[in-house]
Each structure stands twice: as C-alpha cells, then as structure tokens.
Image 1 (spheres, rainbow, N blue to C red):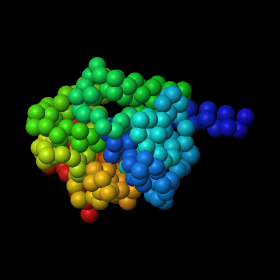
Image 2: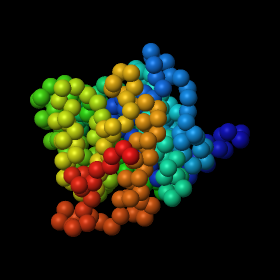
Image 3: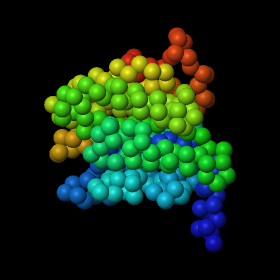
Length: 272
C-alpha cells in the first residue's frame, strides 16, 4: 500500500520535464565493456526518489536511476549517460525533474524524421509526460546528443544541418511549443566526416538553440563512447547551459530579430 501511494504521489507531482534523445552517447555507455555494465554509479549520478523521476517505456513515472535508458535502448547494454548528472545539477534551482529517455544507439538522424518510428515515439512519450495524472507538468527542454551515425558518408554529413533544423521545427510544432529550448551536443567521435557534422551542429542559427561541445571529453577504449567520468562532466556542462539560458526563471519570448537571441552559432560550451 505504501509503495502504491508513493507511485501515485510521483504521478501527481508537478514536474519540470526534459526529453533526453539521440543515440548511444545519450543512452549511455559509461562503464560498459564487453557488453557488460560495471554498475559503478558516481555520486553525481545518485538517485533522488523524491525529486528526480523518469518515464518508463510503459509511460509510468518511477524514481530515476542509472542506467536511465535500460528499457528504451533495449538492443544494447546501457550504462551511465549524461542524464542523471544533469538532473542532479539542476534539481535544486529547478525543482522536481522528470526525465523522458528516448535515445537509441546506432541511429542516424534520418531515422528521427517526422513519421519515422523513433520520432513518433519521442513525441508520444513527451506528450504522455505532460498529460499524465495530476497535470501541471511542462517540457523545459529537449537535450539532444546524436550524429556519430551520420559521419560515415559525405552525403549524410552534408545533409545533417537541414535534417536537424527540420527536426527542431517539427518537434516544436508537434509539441505546441514554438520556443521550446533545444540543447544539442556537438559530437566528440565519429567517422571520416565527423568535422562536417560538428560544424553543422555548431552553425545551427535558430532561436533558443544552444550547443554544448563534447570534443575533448575522454573516450573509452572503443574511441566512440564517453567514459563514465566524461558523461558526468557532460551532464554538468548541459546543466550549466540550461541554467544560464533557460532557467530557473522562464526566458522572455524570443523573436528571430531580437538582439537577445540565444543562438547555437555563438553559444558553445567546451570541456574545462
């Protein structure tokens, strides 16, 4: 009975919702080796059952804990990602944090186009997070880390900017939030055309879009996925970007012609 009451309270709590989306480095591979997660959870990623929640694959709220994407990115072994360190860093000024994991490893941006399964699932989960029991919840930002799968061919890399801009436009439209903040990560690893994708990510010039640069963060032995330590650091960088530009006080409406626009082209965060 006590567990049921706790679950009901979590469902009815007003939440500040963050959509976590993209591919494997968002889903988290920190601590994963030979398809096994070492289960080491840094203190920065500690659970806080009363203040940091996650939406499960079955659209139920539960206390968030690592690995956040275990029931979402089910074809791979998930470990530590940036989500929990991000949530812990913003919890005090923001309030109750509701994380909505959506990332799936190995996915290209064309698989996140409107009408594709991954995109529609992300939108469905975002809507469910807002419309759940109790109401009063608000989507505060989409946190996006993806692009490694688009670095293998010149065609994919050169199409990345237009595809990402379309995704931003579509998700804002479909979630009825024209100024929805987007915090994207400039990739730290990839194939032959990695720099082309990185430049595309850093040059997106849309209101309420900021870019956090992961280049320089430590990669694991596969030279593709961030280590646990690097994921913690990235989570803090994402938190800094969110708090500086979008919270805890809601930003003033931003027009495309405002001199106060937050733009990814000149708002880049780098590892310390």
